[in-house]
Image (cartoon, rainbow, N blue to C red; front, side):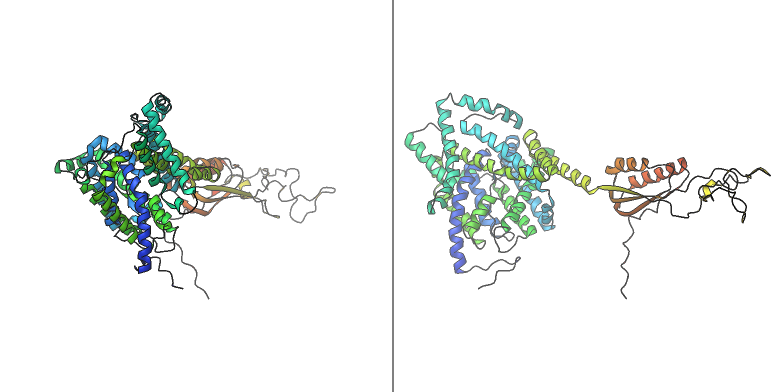
Length: 569
């Protein structure tokens, strides 16, 4: 039995692998074709640009090392951001933004920052996908009904019921909605068919059936407009690069780079769990994504990311090497050159149905339920991220999610526990020196001892009187002697930061002032400056107000090196 390859070493291409990769490439091509066209139309750009991005993802990104079985192309997750950029800056501005984002990705990969994208909170990523999914579903429902969607996420969601209800009164809108609904039903139900028939991509079958029904029934629905691949490719001119001086464009560049990188690398991690082949090299994969997006920007095409739908189809179809994704790019190129006119028969409502299904799949319903049951704080971050994306925008929503995730992590890392133990005074403890009179004060000469005072040394106690305990006897100066008290030991453990300062001060200030207090800091793994200053001030106040001083140990030096372990015998 041949041994499996090393996790970091790509498989060598053999005849058996080539046959498997060839078959897998056809499956991925059939899955990618309707998605490339649908994402392009939903993004407000010519359908041919979606094919161009898919071709670049196969022939350029697919050749480069990184993730061997991951497939790149236009993604539904960037649809909202692309549409907003096209409306604000035009197609030429989109090309500049995608090109600059690709250069940023390439630089981050060369600086070996790819692995740090794995440190992004999963709740932020899922919240981002949920927000994108909600916006896509809402927008494509308008497209399915042939109605123009209002601007802004909240307005779009609020007006959706009225728009769908009004569409029922228009025969053209009813036909359009019926085609979109039928597309969704075919996509959902087709994989459940038995045998090899169910192995065909449901989205492709749905588009073919929608086109056939539309043509045979003569339905009054709009179809894809086709101008040719060469006519659609428009590289940005020199004037478009002046847009990089605008802050809004720079923000869009960072948003594209951040979201595309995070989606690609999280997809790579998910694909790695589907196969036992070489693992993803995250820095190389980020460079590959950056080079692909740089070329897409130069061609004025859509941005590309690694797409989990195509990647999982590639793995399930038996792909073994990078050849499968490269060949899928070849098939897209052949289609774009030889059969671009076939796109003119694709109904737009069918593409809207594909995007509605894709957007719905982006919403992690099971993940939300699991988070709510086990980690409600993470569920809150997810919900806030999604709500901010819908209400404000993509970049702002992601930043809100990242800020909440960092704040939540800081709060949990500063978990502080305050324990105190009440130690009774030991048997035979000597009276405290605090009962002595002030310096220089003596009892009056000849004053008789108070009742109960110990008799002179060696003299027996009076008849019938018990021998008093040293703790019960007054001082030899005739002053009342307070009872001996035990030490109150306070132990702090965890992290003492300014976030937990109210809890720390409440616990310390509630301690009794008539007891000696010893503070133990050995359980702290972090103590910030705010807590140091607050504890010092509290010790001074507590000592001044009571008869016993607070024993506060020296604070640990935050810059001191850890102590070396003792040498063995």
